[in-house]
Length: 182
Image (cartoon, rainbow, N blue to C red; front, side, top):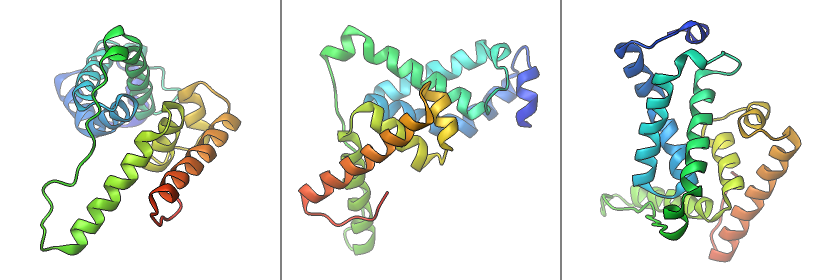
């Protein structure tokens, strides 16, 4: 469906809902995971995000892309989850691991190890740096759109992005790893 048509919907058909989930489901889940560090919570949050979008499609005004709208809902839902007493008291931190690699394929092992190392460094960052880095690097969102999504100034986004990069570089230096600038 064309981006401009979403803002004119008062209800969503099953087919449109399925299309929305297929297109943006992984993006929503990734944002939830980065903010909560939990696969199970990311699953729950993604489900809540799409349920909310289904129920509230008539509230989408088209001021941003449908993807940005969904990622905003994901971020807000994740923040609400993180505020709960359960989340504050019980934090499960499953790390991305390199299982399933083919030991005879040296390159695959090296690549997977590098990805794991990068994710571990990113997951060490405070949430405000993690989310800016994810939105900018993974989703290639412009700084202006990130600022709107996070409800902060563009200068704040630039500052957080710079600090996130510095911190990741610091983690890599501590580990003795070489890196390319993220």
